[in-house]
Amino acid sequence: MQIADFLGLLHPVVAVIFVFPLIGIVVNFAWQTRQRRLQTLAGAKSKIPPVVGSEHRKIGEWLTGAIVGLVLLGLVYPIGKNILKKQLWTTAPFQVVFIVLLFAATTASLVLLYQAREKKWRGIFATLTGMGLVILGCQDGVYRLTNQWYWSHYYIGMTAALLMIFSLAIVQDIYQDKSNRWRTIHTILNCIALLLFVGQGLTGTRDLLEIPLSWQEPYIYTCDFANKTCPTPNPQTPK
Image (cartoon, rainbow, N blue to C red; front, side):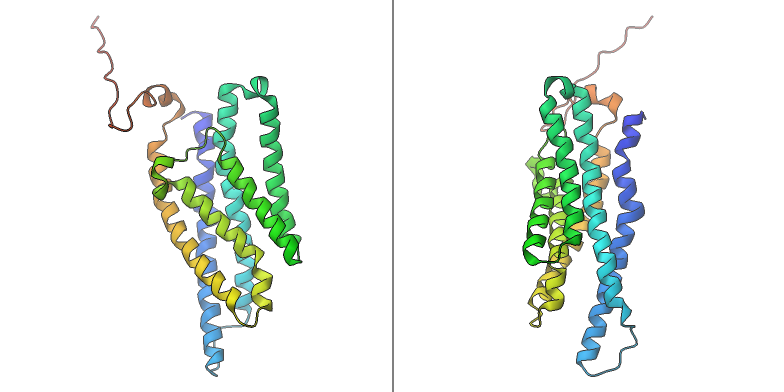
């Protein structure tokens, strides 16, 4: 493996070591929070400590930031690789500057989303963060597998990230809404996101098998992926 291939492993390594454990912790706290609420509404004394609710919110906010960061990490590698391969800094310098500024703007929008308190600004910064991810994901070099979008690691991951951004934007509404409408929406969307994260584990493993190493690319990309055939190499003449 070359250095470029090791850099390509940063995205799955961070996902396995940091993000997926956070998902487990958040799900555990979410379950405990719901059980405590149901027990309290039934008039019973719950043995679950009250702190689980605040812990669920805090670690859930960490999870959103971790997922957006993971998506950016997964995008910066193929986009950067494409820039270096095609030497875009000389042929299309404005495109390179735009991409760099877009990475910075997306990160800044996420930071401002954490700081925003008014509903209007939360909506604006959540929209800008989501737009930044989508526009970056449309850049050349990203392995999207569009013809099989229904089990594409890119599309599933992007959908999950957008759901998490939306969940972060409505956190304050959940606590202010006495009708529990936003809480119900939050629960449904995050159950969907949890299923998408399971899909990410499956499709991410598959993509590690499908994406070739740097030195294999010249041969692999001559294959016919539709018919699943590759050109037969010329046999070497014995000396």
